[in-house]
Length: 222
Image 1 (cartoon, helix red, strand yellow):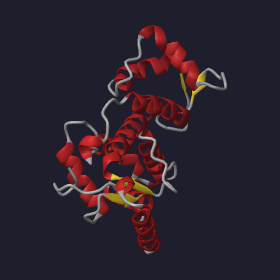
Image 2 (image 1 turned 60 degrees about the horizontal axis):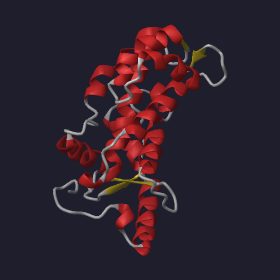
Image 3 (image 1 turned 180 degrees about the vertical axis):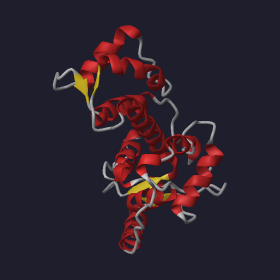
């Protein structure tokens, strides 16, 4: 099923000549993209609303169709990662503080490599990878809100006891970390053995673990 309800080819199903042609067309389009900086206020940003409006859950296929079409602004079953980043930022009016950390690019890379697709370059994200892209971002923004609630900043590290308080929310994304596993997971993230972990390392390890455990293939969304 494609985004308009009809069967469409994903990028990796195209011939090499088709891929090369599409990449060239998208490059021209990307060069002409106009980035309009969001005007959202970081201090009063609606994190809860943002998280609720990312349809990464497996039963929200129709909402993903709608969102993909709005962000893609075309009938294609794929989108350049530059256009995806530009339009996602504008659609959700992400504050500048978030944009600087560039989670959109991280989510694109995670989605593309989830299914071991290694094109000539990774400048194209296809529809069947969109749910993983959203799953990454839903976790990322959930954890951002958690750090703000706990530390008032994502630039402040958390210790083991604070990490333990986050476990119930982390487990909602499929990790199921047991009490006797918490300290070991913390040590995996605390690679410098400083007794505390940063937001960036927290996300890098835990989101990747969650995506690795995701057991739904991408066939149903082709």
